[in-house]
Each structure stands twice: as C-alpha cells, then as structure tokens.
Length: 531
Image 1 (tube, rainbow, N blue to C red):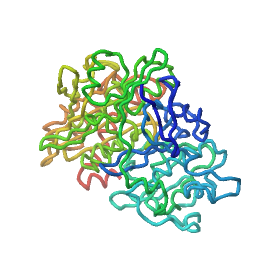
Image 2 (cartoon, rainbow, N blue to C red):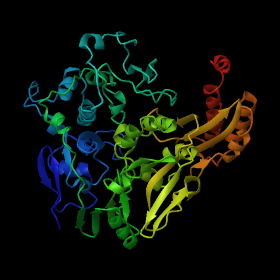
Image 3 (tube, helix red, strand yellow):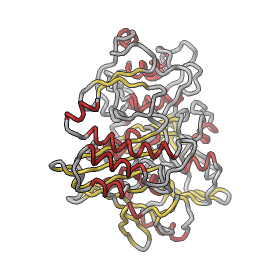
Image 4 (cartoon, rainbow, N blue to C red):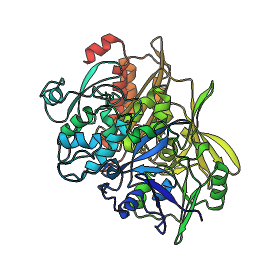
C-alpha cells in the first residue's frame, strides 16, 4: 500500500496507523499543531479552520478555508495544508516580525481576547486575504475606528457595505432577526475584503468589531510572500488512495468507473465529498461506516457544462466553486448561496451531498425544484435522468438504487425571469432553515403564465407547492389572486412542531413568503402602498 502523506506547513507528514475515521483536526493536533480547536464538532463555530490549497483552473491555486473537524484526514492525501502555526508564530508576547499580516492586524486591533477562536479566524481571514478577486486599499486606522466615521453610529457589530446594485445597506452582524431581504449583498471593506468570508467563525468575546477592523485594514500580499507566490502554480492533483486500519477502509477511486465498480461490490459504502454531513454523523452520532469512498476530487463529477438547453453542474463541485463559475447567471441560486450555511461549509459542501442525504430541510432542493431541475444518476449499469420532483420518496429516502450515485444536477435554461429564495431561520446566516421557499415565475401582460414553487421544512421531503401553483397559473398578477393563493400555500405540506418552529409558524411563513414575493415584484404604485 502506498504511503499516505499530507504536506502540512511545507513539510510532508505521513498518516500511518491512524483510524480510518480520524478527522483532519484530530490528526493535526496529534502532530502538536494545536492552534486549530474543536468547538462544536459540526462545522458551525470555525475554531478548527485551516487553509487548503485547491486547484483554481488549469494552472493556478486558490487558498481555501475549511472546517478541519469534519473531513477525514485521509481525504488530504497528496494535498497541501497551512495551519495558523504555518502562517506565523511569534517568539514572544511583543514580537511581531514573525507574524503574518493577518495575525499582526488581529493583534494590533484587539481582535483576540480569550484566543480560543482566533486561529480559526486567522485562517478564514487569510483565505480572503489571498483571494485573487479582492481589490482595494486598506482602511485608514483612525478613520475606521472612529465612531460613526464609516457611516454607522459606531456601535459594535454594525457594518456598512455596498450592495451589488451600488446602494448602501447597514446590517447587524451579531444576533439579528432572520430577515434575509438583503442577505445576498456582500458587505465589503474598502480593501475589497468580503466580511461574509468570516460568517462561519464565531466569537463570544470581541463583539466582532475589532475583527472586522483588522480585516478591513489588510493590504495586498507582498510579491515575495510564499503563499501568494503559490497562487501562480497549479494546485495539487488528486491522488488515488487506498488505506485500511482495523476493519475499516478508505478509498479515493482514480476514475468514475473505479468508483462505480467498487460501489457495485460494496453498495453500503459511505460516499464522502466535503463531509459537511457525514462528518457530523461521525463526530456526534459516532457512526463508523466500514468503507469510506472519497469523491470530492473525482474529475468526472466536477464539470460545469453548458448546452443550448441546460446547465449541468457536477455533483462534486463545491458550492463556492459553483457560485464563482455561475457568477449570477442563475439568479435564484445567486440568492441561495450566501444563505447556505457559511463560507467555510460552502467550501466543502456540494449539490450531490445536499441532495444525496434526502434531508427535508436542505436549502438546495427548494431552489432546484423551482428551477425544474433534474438529476443525472449513474451506476455500473449506466446513467438515467430523474426529475428532482420525483427523486424524494420519503424521509431521507430517494429513488437512488444500491450502487447508484448522483453524477450531476441539470438545470433547464428556459429560466423564469422573476425569482426569489427565502430562508426563514433563527439566525440570518450559518443556520438551518425552519422553512425555505424558492419561487420562479413568468409574469407576462399582467398574467402569471407559469410558476414553480419549491418548499423545504414543511413535509417529510422537499416538495413542489403544486396546489398554490395551480391557484396562480393563468390568473391575473394581482393582490386578490395572491391573497387567495397565499391561503392555499399556508395549507401546503404537513408542517410539524419541533425545536426550530411550530407547525402554525411554518404555515404562516409559507403564505407570507408568497405575499412578500408579490410586493417585491409588483407595479411601483403597489410597492409604495406596501412601504
């Protein structure tokens, strides 16, 4: 069996004798790299964040932040990782010469107090620091720290940023109501730093203001910075991997054919991409699948192709990669992405994984249902295409047969021009939906010529709101029509009471989502009355 090695902070380290289910965080800490820490073990706090070198096209690399507590360490065979220790380590409390610019700004501006979360913040901030698209000049320290000088009242947790349309919006970055009306607006600093790159990192001490100040004070990487230089070379290639310890096995097949052959022989093997769901099961429920099959770097599952009829998204592309590649081409997905967990999670999560679990509260299914998406399923026996509306058969149950995988998501290009995605949750970001609603409508000459509505969180599976669609299709786009349809929509599904929301609340949110969609997409005189 070939040696399993991971390049950590510039040094090749071997994985030898570790249990198959050891996650990256535990393995790194076993090496004495204890900056990254376990806070939640489910990808919500970001204390475990590290940097991973990922291919960025044919001949470039992108430093990507990921939660180390979720993926298996074996999934990084042949890959490159940088921890907070690898960014920089000061010799003493007042030493600064060996600190990375991100670490220096965090220290200078009081961005670390108890310090538990700081290494994770540092790594997420460094990924944004090296993001190739980031441009701008750092904020002036005196101006940035002065109360009210940035367009706010100087209170902790308030950010002023620019929306894509150029309008200014003020948003609370601490606890806020789950109103996601401007959630797609990426607040950025004068240096181009996207503050949402830190949405998966939680801090209980600072109130976030000094962390934001540190982020906005960052300049551009120096030309001699080795991590910046790494961006100009090809990213590390995926390596076929086979490893066994005890009664468990880990495999990274070299090709899709190899994967399907192994699945045909071991249909109960657990497929792993970003491990944003599997990792939680391993950590909190202590499941131990006998076989793990890594598909996250499998080339045949990582294409994004366009035809005159559809866009096809490979099941193993991360959501961050899909977001960059589409760049707003499919508006309802552009609204979905910022609300899907956090940047740390989206850097690992995939459409294949979100759909493969069959969860009724996944955020992707409602949006894809509204788009009329279908799935390309593959097995050793061949491929078939299944309409997403027919894919879910029960709670965490689907039409996938043993040995069959999701190869791609196919979205027809007859895109409805009027769309929206609404996520109702206790937190504005980095939270699980109580209700998710996606709407794609075609309104022509005052009539609803076509409409699709996808809903999650109100039944054992994600569903199309078919009765509501029938109540709208072919009718005038008017307050009377929508009010009647909202009553119908409130009765869709079989919502339940749980710790996230009551069934009554969920039903009410369904009707309100449709009313909100009407207000946001009505003649200007209706909007003025609504305001």
